[in-house]
Length: 96
Image 1: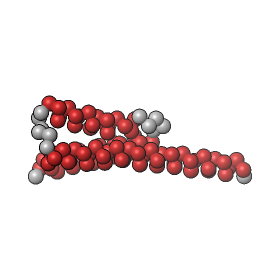
Image 2 (image 1 turned 120 degrees about the horizontal axis):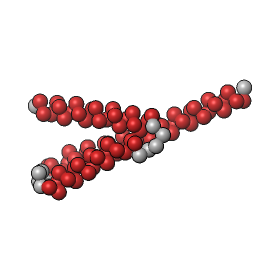
Image 3 (image 1 turned 90 degrees about the horizontal axis):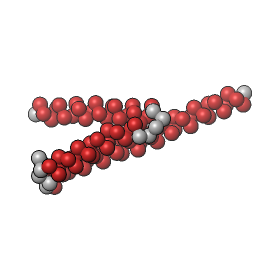
Image 4 (image 1 turned 60 degrees about the vertical axis):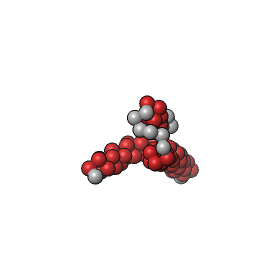
């Protein structure tokens, strides 16, 4: 049970870090560091045979990778909206 709690805590910290990287930094690659690291780690874990490649074991990793890559895309969209709102404010001030 404690392992599950620790796992969720680590995942929450990674989600927060990825959110900050995706929405605050200009280069989109910074936000992709964590999802790519998780994808590479997942591939290494299954390729090394530490965890057998079964549906029961594969499903949580698919959900994890999908959620992190989805979070990356959502964060980049939010970054673009924030930038557009700033540009609109600047244009409005220029007009006045």
